[in-house]
Length: 586
Figure (cartoon, rainbow, N blue to C red):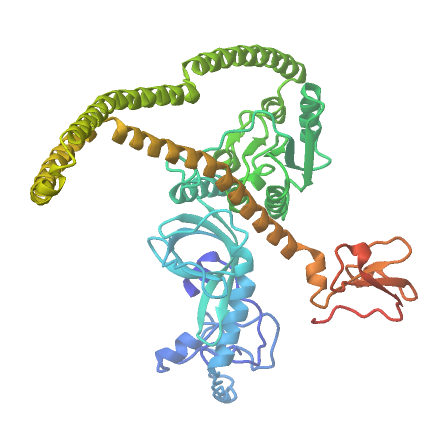
C-alpha cells in the first residue's frame, strides 16, 4: 500500500502534530540536522514538517556562511533539545489508522481481474472468492443482497470488472474488496446469463433435443384461452382484436401481470400457475416488443420452469419475430407476434361452420348407406337361419318310422307262435280219449315232467336265443339314438327355459345391490342414526354453516322416525336461534 501511495504522488491526510507517526516517532521537525552518529532507524523515522508552525529554536545557520567570522563574538552555547518521547501504538490503534487511511483513500474503485477460489454461496448467501492477476490478488466479498441480483453465474477463471470499495477487517488485519457491481469482461452480463440459463435448462431436459417432455400439440378449437400479459399493454389489444375478428365466440381468461421491471418474473410465473389450475385449454404468454432489458422477464428461470410445469400447452408470443427468449424455447409453440398467436389459436368461424355443415351432410349420407347395408345383411342372415320346429318335426317323423319298422318285425313272430300253440291245443284235444285218460295219467305225468324239463330247456334256449335276437335288435334298433336325441332335446329345452330365469335372477340381484347402495346413501338412513336436518322457516333453505342463520331467526329441525320414508314424513321441531358461536372442533 505504501508503494502505491507513493507512486500516486498524493500527500497523506493531515494528522495531529502532537501524535506519533505509524513508527512511534514524533511528528515535530528536528531543531537541527541529526548527527552522523545517529542510528539508521532514527534517520529513517524523521519526516517532513507538517503545515503550520511550532515553537522551537531557530534552525542552524546555512552551510554557506563563513566559519572564520566567529572569533570576534563568542556565540552562546547551543542548547541541546530533549530527545522526543517514543509513542507506542496498540495493534487496534494502528489497525484503525490503517482502516481510516485505506477506506478514505479508496471509497470507490473498479478492479479488473480473474475469479479464483469461488465455492458458491455460503449458508447466509454471501460469496467469497479471490480476484487476481499476474502480479497480485485480493480477497473479494459479495453480499447476499448483491448476489441475488446478478443475472449470470460466477465461476473460476472468469475475468470480471468488479466495482466496489476497499474494506479492512480489524480483527484479522486483512483488507478486501466489497463488490457493489459485477460484470463479465468481453461479453454482456445479460448475454452470459442467457446462455448459462439456456445450457442449464438443456442439461435438465427442459429445452433442446433431449427434452423430457416433447412439445404438446395445440388444440384445434380451444374453448377458452388463458392470456398472461399486462392489462394495459398493446399486445393484449392486438391479440384480442385478431382473435375476436376470426372467432367472436371464443372465450379469453386474462391473468394480469407486469411484464417488465423488478418482481415482474414472479407475477408472470404466478399468473401461469393460476391459469394452469383454471378451466383453460391453452395459455398464451405475450407482450410487445422492446429492448433486451425490457424482455428480460421472460428470460428468468422462474418463468421458464412455470411454463414447463403447466398442465396445458403454452404459446410464447414475446416481442417481434427477431426477438428470442428462454420462454420461446420452453414453450410448446412459439409465435413471432401476439397477432400470429391469435391467428394460430382461432380458426375462422365461418369456415368452421361451412366445414361442419359439409361434414354433417357426409355423415348423414354415410349413416343412411350403412343402415341399408345392415338391413340387407340382416335379411340374408335371417334366411340362412333354420327353424328349430322343423328339425323337431323331422326327428319325430323319423322316430315314428323306426317304431313302425320294429312292429312290422315283431307282429309275424307273435302270430306264428300263437298259431302253433292253437294247433297243439287242438291236437291234444283230439288225442285224449276218455278211456286212456287214467292209463296214461302216469305216463302223462312222466311225459309232463319230461315236457316240463324239455320245455324249461327249450324255454331257456329260446330265451337265450331271444335275448341274443333282442340284443341284436336293440343294436340295430333306432331306440337308443331316439333316446339320446330326446335327452339332447330335453337338455336344450331345459337350457332354453333356464336362460330367462337366470337373466331375471341376475337382474334381480343387481337391482337389490343398487337398492342397498341407494338406501345406504339416503339422507334418511343417516338421520335415523341420530342426525337431524335444520332449515330456515322463512325460505326453506338448509342450514350448512353459522353464516346461514341470524340471531332470532326461526329454524325447523327434522328428525327421522322409524317409519319415515321421505323428508315430508319426518318429525319436525321448531326452534329459535339465540346465539351463534364461531367454528370449534366438533
